[in-house]
Amino acid sequence: MLKSLTQYFLRIFAKKLIKKYKPDIIGVTGSIGKTSAKEAIAAVMTSNFNVYRSAKNYNNEFGVPLAVLGIDKTPGSSAWGWLKVFVKAFKLIFVRDKSYPEILVLEMGADKPGDIQYLTDIAPCKVGVLTFIAHVHTEFFKTIKRIAQEKRVIISHLRRDGFAVLNYDNDMVMQNIKTTKAEVMTYGFKQGADLQATDLNIIIDEVTGWPKGLNFKIIYKGNIVPVFLAGVISKPPIYAALAGLAVGTVFGVNLVEGAEVLKRLAPLPGHMGLVKGVKDTLIIDDTYNSSPEPSKSALDALSKLKPKLGAKRIAALSDMLELGRETENAHREVGFKVAEAGVDFLVTVGEAAKHTAAAAKEAGLDEDKIVSFADSATAGRFLQDKIKEGDIVLVKGSQSMRMEKIVKEIMAEPLESDKLLVRQDSEWLNR
Image 1 (cartoon, rainbow, N blue to C red):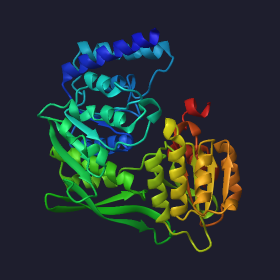
Image 2 (cartoon, rainbow, N blue to C red):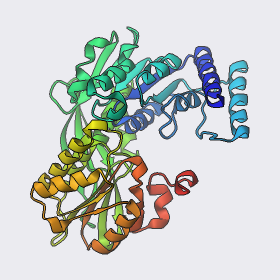
Image 3 (cartoon, helix red, strand yellow):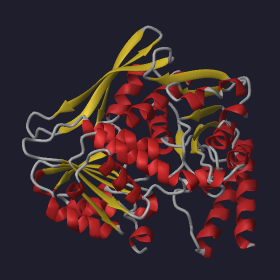
Image 4 (cartoon, rainbow, N blue to C red):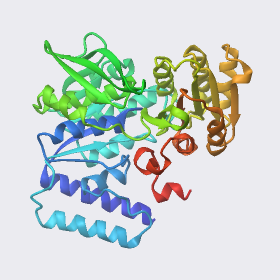
């Protein structure tokens, strides 16, 4: 009852604030890539506007209204904390705050049907960004068609003077293009995208021999702009950068200026970031979350990195959750991809990931190069002993599998974990 009442008042406060201050709202949703796209969009837009972006992954019926109120940290169960939230809301409503943002960049998630409609009713968007549609939360939506129906609300609710920013490379996204009345801006690698990325190239540090980032070119209306992203090695961060630059062009941000901003944007912890490991190893930290398509993409990225002579490519993969009846098939597909990517040693964590291990074995990976564990902490201790100099270790898993514990176990500077890793606040560490 108290939770429902709090949600009700948050909704009312947020709607009143939006009606009063009339910020332009950029809503970002998709099965994957929402948070990275939100961060890139906010970074590009901040160069020219007063912008506020939703904190962390505040993307639900509580998080979005809190973002509209400019709250960076949820009060949780603190009555005093919620009282301060409501006091701030009343002040913003009854006393005009001249510093209130011109633009709100809001991540909008969907755990169940109707979520995006609820959030866009609170915060109608001028720009709707649809990053990707894939098998995520299938347990609750049952089919990918229903996932698509939910996600496309971000563009179908737009007015004619709005803008739909779409991932041109994802067929499921583009199949929904006719559901919007807004002007469409597309981005991607494929020929035909309004904002097209080409010439992807991983840059190797001449001193360490490890990758230090990647560069690529953007083609837009006949103009070519180079972009460098530090500390990343895979396509997903490029899609986020493209989304940021595409939204920037909607608001008149110069592409060169936007690219310069992105060059200084640090990768989000747990999003295919590069972390120095013990014994002069390299960790690809992709522990924020997991689902089938990002897992395959991460393995693709691992396959493109060449270990030092005598070293190995190691993948530590956990259960991918909330896949419902797709669970076994999805994990098996990832297992086949493990073998295809040339992984030398596979570590799995969790029951469902045993299907990944079985499929990798079927696809040709030797049984003595596969090991499975029930939890990430035990797997981390095993890897601490297993890894050798020059090894490259990909670590990926769903949020509640806590695969960041493996990274913390094998990283060279664990005292920097609060800066480099996901879920290092007291709330998560005490779980």
